[in-house]
Every structure is written in C-alpha cells, then in structure tokens.
Image 1 (cartoon, rainbow, N blue to C red):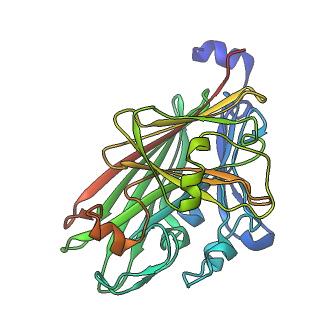
Image 2: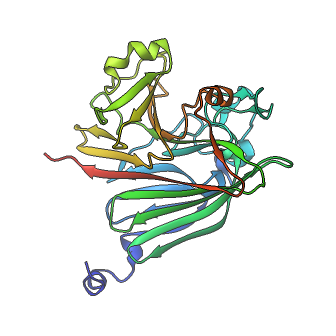
Length: 332
C-alpha cells in the first residue's frame, strides 16, 4: 500500500504497527526495560535489552507461540552463574541466547581455560547498550550491542539487529560476534528458541528436510527417534529428549498446528550454525519444544574440542549469524 492510500485510512502509523519502550514495575523483572513491537501482519513480541536483547513473549494473530517457564521474566540481578542455579532463573521466552564461551551443560574446562562454565554460559546476564528502536520505511528496527568479557581473558562484542517488516509476520536476527583481543578465542553459541502451548500441542507436527543426520543425545532420546517429529499431551514426570540435526543443504524447520491453522518456520545461516538442536520436553508443567540453531553439539567445551567441533575467532575476527522466524496461516 502506498503512503497516500495508507494515510488516507490512518492518521498515525502506531494505529497498526510500531515499537515502544516499556519499564516493568513489579515481580522478579521489576525495573527492566523491554521493547514492545507490533506489526500490521499480526505479530506482537517483547524484545528484552536487559537480558541480551533476547525475545520474551511472542504472539501471532493473538495466539501465544512461545514457552514461558515457571520463573517468568527475570532481570540480570537474578542471574547466578553458579552450579545448579540455571533452573532457578531460566525464563524461557521465544529466544534465549546461549554462549559465548560455552553453551550446553555446566562444565569445568580442564583442557582449556580451566574455568567453571555455567549451563548455557554467561550471555543472558548481560545488558545491551548502544540501543536503537525505530521504524525505518517498511521495517521496524531494534538493535544494540552486548558485551561479554573477563579481565585478563576474553572480550566479546555481539552486535544484534532485528529487522521486522512493519506489515509482515516475520523477523530476521542479524548478529555479528567479534573477538576484541589479540589472542584467538574459542566460542560456542546457541539460539534457544522455545515454542509452547497452544502453538505446541498433540495436534502439532514438525517438518524438516529428509536429507539430514540425526543424533539422539541419550538412550531415551534414541528410543523416541521414530517419533521425533510428533508430539503428545503433557505427561507427568516425562523425561526430556534432545536430537541433534545436521541438514545437508536446506536449513529450515517448520512447526505446524493444523488445529490452529498456523505454521512457524525457523531458518538460519548453516555455514556458521551447522547444528539444529531439538529439545522435546513433554513433561507436565514444563511442556516445551526448543528449536535451536547452534555452532556446536552443546556437549561442553572439552567434548567439543576433543571431537574437533570447537570454533575459534581469530584476533579481532568476527562471525556473522542469521536466524529468521516466519509465521503464516495454513491453507484450508
């Protein structure tokens, strides 16, 4: 629609799309900021600069898409990078970025830096700076920079940019991670995208390219391999299953819910994120599907290094990752 026609119907574009900054004033997230983004295509989402510019709630056409843990929104003040603490603060949300030194289980890297690394790393405890949020022509832009560093050791900069068509139902994440030291640094990164009810239900099905290598993480996951792409009703006490997928060419996965008539598609830069981890948790109260483009198999730094999968950023070198999330209605 051209501007003349558009502004014939509305006097203010915020009637149909826009972005605004909000400060939360209660609960465990009291005091944090978020950007509320709304598109004319039916997309509504919260982007959280105080926790790594990740995504919290996301709705499409008024229907909830993401999983939210029992903890709910949090703040950096609640982030405790100690053994056994992750489940006390993990909020879920549409996107929880993991890294940048470590992703996966908590571990002590005895063959590397010798440090303890908490489950899924330190990234989530960092607030973004150099923030910007605005409408630029046909797109809504939210951008900022997150720094993860340690005196005498690593110094990462992650510049993140969301590009969200103002009249569409999709978003594109463009990240550039830079090593700001004169020594090479090993890094790990995982885009933990979490789908929950009602988008995820027993009616949902998952689609992936047929040409892919699938590696179950545990014996129980191996038992469920034939039902990898299917879901069931919540089960009390059910054990989680994780599958690692390596696509031969097409990096995409689609979650479809025929009952709702909706489809969510995730795609990513396969050259920098060669693995798709699939977290399937049908446990009552923790009912979630994680679709997680990753640089590694998230088995801990020592394991990734031994298996030759650890990636390295050279001095002042950068890597660019792209992740896209697109929503549509299923044909009737």
